[in-house]
Amino acid sequence: MSDAALAPLLAGFAAARVVVIGDVILDRYVAGEAARLSPEAPIPVLRPATRHAVLGGAANVAANIAALGASVCLIGLVGPDPGAAELRRLLAARPAIRPTLIERPERITTVKTRFLSGAYQLLRLDEEQSDPPSPAAAAALCAALDAALADAAQHAVGVVVLSDYAKGVLGGGVLEHALASAAARGCKVVADPKRADFGAYRGVFVLTPNEAELRAATGRALSDDAAVAEAAAVALAATGGMAVLVTRSARGMALIARDAAPLFLPTRAREVADVSGAGDTVVAALAAALAAGGSLADAARLANLTAGLAVAKRGTATVSATEAMAALHLEDVLAGEDKILPGPEAAARVAAWRARGLRVGFANGCFDLIHPGHVRLLRQARAACDRLVVALNT
Image 1 (cartoon, rainbow, N blue to C red):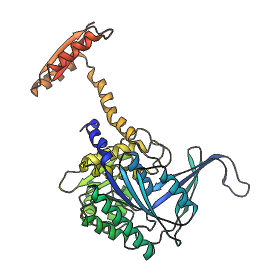
Image 2 (cartoon, one colour):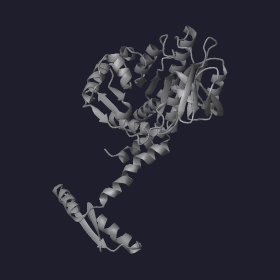
Image 3 (tube, rainbow, N blue to C red):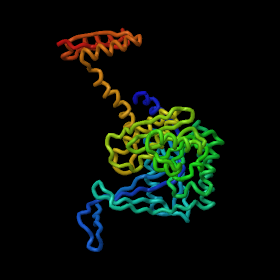
Image 4 (tube, rainbow, N blue to C red):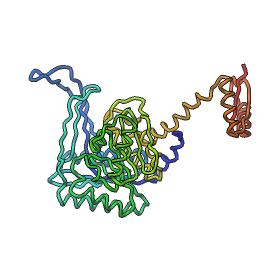
């Protein structure tokens, strides 16, 4: 299937709605110049020049879904602190996201602060609390999910994303409740796992581990495509779901679906600037595509393409529907170069067309300065055949 064939699926994202529950994170970036070492210790001294914050974790999944054109409900857990206030400010700027952030006095908001000099990270500071939510917090999370699913059912939407960053939000029975509630409403579940026991996600529709997570969960060496497929099949048996989509960094992705041949997708990244948040982009595109009625294979292809766009950006970033659509049609632009052939190759292609029963037409001219007469000639010739050969007079 060509990339352009996925464009109608992407266009259908406007009618798609997804529910995301998991570990919301605030990603902060402090960038500046590190031109000298500290006299107190052999460490660089950073003079900050810029500071900014973006949505991370489950919030980044929601941001990517919204950027791709779908509507999303985000459910997470925060504390009564400046990090939560910053998250709410960032979410308010994205009207396609409907956030429900449960604030509890016993929690702190997960904040990751990266200190950079040029393109290099000097240090990352993690402020987090990874223990399971209190019974009251878990009950509030489950109630918020049930309300979102009831609303989603009214809009004929059936995709739930479990964004597990091992920060505790999906503990305390929340994961089990989410799986049961989704199943009761016939919702598909996409889970980005962090637990070593994939059996905890039993009932998911698609599991999206990376190779390191798949290796840890199955205890298998992932030396080649066949080994990845075998390990993914083990993971699939553990979840009882329909598919496992393995993200493989520079080697692309592997989709192992029940009752289907493995699908290996080469990486679409033309340039890699930063892999931060690329997994969130994969999950977002996969979930939005499934919510829009796409098949597993088409959803995986679209997720692979958006991942290639995400890693070309620095920091935690989103991929817009416009960027994705432009990338889908790039193949058609590049394919134009394949239409220019010397005589012998053109003859071989014509013979192949005829062997398929296609009607082949022929037109020729100087075409030095294209004018309306040329356009009419080409349109009429093309309308009379399945394939058209245009020859340039020398």
